[in-house]
Amino acid sequence: MVPELNKPAVIGAGPAGCMAAYYLQNVFGVTLFDPSEPLKTLLATGGGRCNLAYAQYDFKELAKFYPRGEKFLYSVFSKFAAADTLEFFKQLGVETYTQPDNRIFPVSNSAKDVREKFLNALKKCRFVKEKVLGINVLNEGFEVVTDKKNYSFDKIVIASGGHSSYDIVRSLGHTVVEPKPALTGLKTKENFKALAGVSIQVNGENLLFTHGGISGPLAYKISSINARADFPYRISLDFVGEVDLQAMLNDNPHKSLKNLLSELVPKSLAVYILGGLSDEKCHKTDGKTRDEILRRLRNFEITVTGASKGGEVVTCGGVALSEVNPKTLESKLVKGICFCGEVLDIDGFCGGFNLQNCWSTGFTAADYLSGMYRNKS
Image 1 (tube, one colour):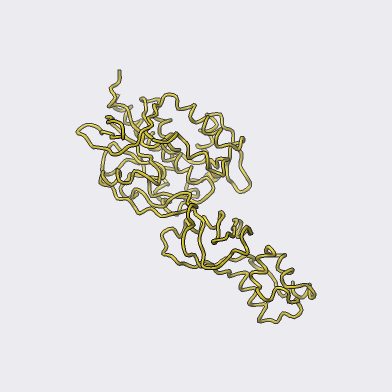
Image 2: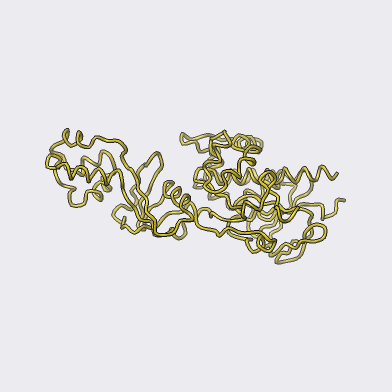
């Protein structure tokens, strides 16, 4: 019988932890610690449909979708990227399809179905529903302290996500980059209550106005890019691009301005932009007014005052990447401990990128540790 010390432990049974466990389970038995249900966080992804990946198959291009972690992910994605993700889920019995926007979903459109098939593939793993309170470094291996008892392991993968275990990480000597909300709706100084529920495409990405500010994929992207910016900050949006507004005015002299602009943007947004000019006829619009309307359409300014409460999808922040080997994901400070998933200071935009980070880093950590086990035997 293989002594328990020879079995790796995975802290966190989310997407990254379960990915690592899947690729470790055929080397030795794997123990996963998580006080919650395994892969529970997968159920809400992609609006319940599970946006598994993004159809970008050049790993350097794929890495550009990560505001934090781009260069670090080169080595990781060279080992396991989008094509590997599709092959992995195909082996689990999950067929996929690609939307026109390159987001990849299961044919079932069910995160629950993906979760069930993934869990069925983890039959050799041992799930321990206990909260890990600490990790002690021993002369040989590690002691994992939970709220129930202590365990001994020789290798550990920390995949505890972006909301917990930072005290444990710090106790191991690691720097934790302060977590900040990313991929979240934004509160604004401007009052958009009259526009609540209105959406508009800006450069191919959807923006949704809310009672408190803005939301939708474009707002999430803005929040991600500016996750470490100080509030308030200003953004400027171009709703129409190159448009000959004078020609439109000339061709529609008896239309009201709000009806004319509703050909370019939703009518309620046109009314908001025009203000008291909404019912003015086009033929009465002078050059100065025309230029001001065009400026508002092409340079729509918003003052962001904060992140919306409860809107956070992921966090930026986590284990400092300078303290982790990008080729193996092993700690540079404590040999035998690897990190994967959102516990690292890596985060991506909406579109399957944060799950891809989990799949790829989970595989990379497991591949490295599996090689260590094989070399020992």
